[in-house]
Image 1 (cartoon, one colour):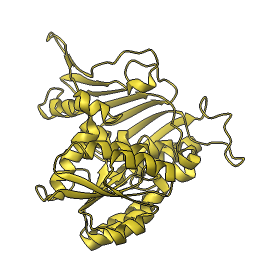
Image 2 (cartoon, one colour):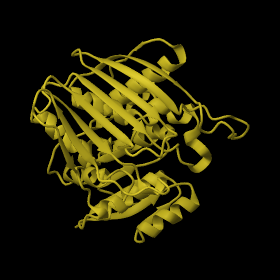
Image 3 (cartoon, rainbow, N blue to C red):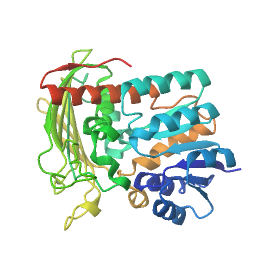
Image 4 (cartoon, one colour):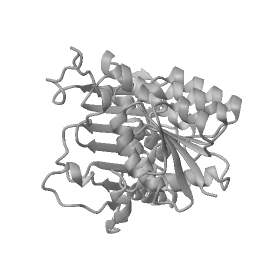
Length: 363
């Protein structure tokens, strides 16, 4: 019997989940819930056998799902997760877990109370070049990691239903909404928790002339951030949301006493007018006389066609499916991981507003 999925949300990211789940032979999407009729129609075209619902409550009461995927606006996650957790079925929820650390704590408490497995969708971990970077660090290529530098130079935020992603109140702010991936990677690569962050950012180029119900967007479109970690290591983020012409959308560099290892990730080609597709790379820059190496990390074309995240959504679902069928017992990306990312992002937003370094609250 196939694993039966219920999808809550039908927008761009939900559709990416649908395309990737459909690549697995023993899965079936039986229900999709979203209040927006055009988005439901787009999702229905990808999962023709699924029953469509205008809200999650209707789907939950009508269908017996083995697992759920939550891909709705950030500010809806807390309420939706609070109800889903009661069903004790595995959940894959889009990032960020919630928009505030207070709501993250409440979700963690509920999941513990009900014994529900919740996986936070930090799919950047599973991008093939970043997975290779992690493997190089585990093999000791760099020695113990001392510094992590992450640069993301990418396209502006896309248009979303009801323009929800234009306002900090609904997204948690760019440092939460977008950068939770990078805070998660820093913790993963440095094997330590953050203690303080200093961030500087602004809205300088994007959305300046846009108005929604008379309100101007307030989401940051560029920032630098420096993070101190408990083990003495450091992380740095360089974010620009108006640099879609860059050869590499993300470059993640980890430096230790033996070498610096760089993972270079191209952006989705559909946002790069006139550009040619690029193959991700891993570069190892050794200290001393050992020659540096550059290795191409090809990604299966089918996976690239299924989404905008360098094949990582497929690999994430491959691992989540093992959780659903009982092959593994706990999520690889936990509620604690998701909560740390929100807490660090929330502190970075506060640092931008105050101009001061801000302590990071432990979840």
